[in-house]
Image (cartoon, rainbow, N blue to C red; front, top):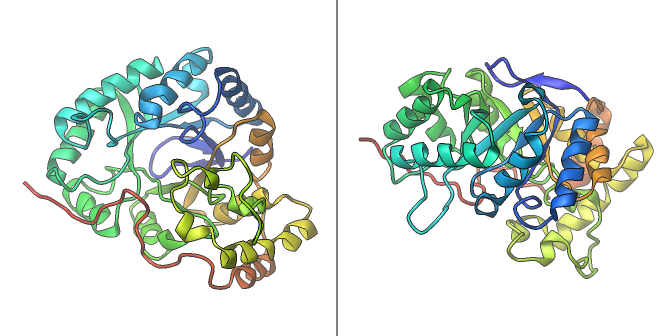
Amino acid sequence: MRYRKLGSSDLEVSEISLGSWLTYSGGVAEDQTRACTEAAFDAGINFFDTANVYGQGAAETAWGEILSKHPRDSYILATKVWGPMSDTDQGLSASQIAKQIDASLRRLRTDYVDLYQAHRFDSTVPVEETIDALQQVVTQGKARYLGFSEWTPQQIQTAIDIAGPELFVSSQPQYSMLWQSPETQVFGLSATNGISQIVWSPLAQGVLTGKYKPGQPLPEGSRFADDQMNISQDLVYNDATLHAVQRLVPIAHELGISMATLALAWVLRRPVVASAITGASRPEQVHANARAAGVQLSDDILQRIGDALGDAPVRGPRLAPGATEGILHR
């Protein structure tokens, strides 16, 4: 495993991290969750990413029980706030942030998280209120650093203008060979202000593993076969995209690596990307993903990848699901 500095913080995070969105929020049994988490430690993964809304606290609870068996300084723990926890509990108001960080810490069985992230931007709350509340979490010692997920360039810049570039150390955008939108503005703005990227869905929900074939039925039990788990079927699951992905298969074979390794190495080629968040339901998947750390792709290979993908990727400034444009000031 290799490690990269997370923005302007003193955190060194593993290039491959373990997430809990579609797995440990209720879709994977306790013994599998434990096995995958322990496999992550075995593979040198030290960065674990979750959120309060994953399984309405289930993912945090699972990791609270498992991670508490390990020394607290042996792993870097990140969680998020914003999503609905009940009919009345949602968003980034001062009261919600204060309430949700305490609830997350109880479930995670820890006094602090290393990284506390605004899961999305809340356009219904004055941005100054959100920033003040997040800073209070750090001041109180409940989080070491702050980050955000799927904020627009305008929202990022507004926060920096109010609180300075030291406010955030990380950005968590969707990013993969098939979703390249963050490259247009978010990456550059973040890098200028000492903010690293922690990217989610680097395998495009499994599409970039090559397991989905054009013209063939969806594999039973796959994410795209489940409407509740699939967030971007219209964007990446179509015959044109699947044909493009199949054109990548010979490239991976030539390099002697898996399609997943190729996709993960591709996102990690960018120095601004500190870590790629991966999911797993079996320990062997964790180890397979970890093997992408340190894999270097030559300029020739990157050109061939670009040629193979053609027009398949989303390269414009489209927002990922749940992201918002508006900014409210007080």
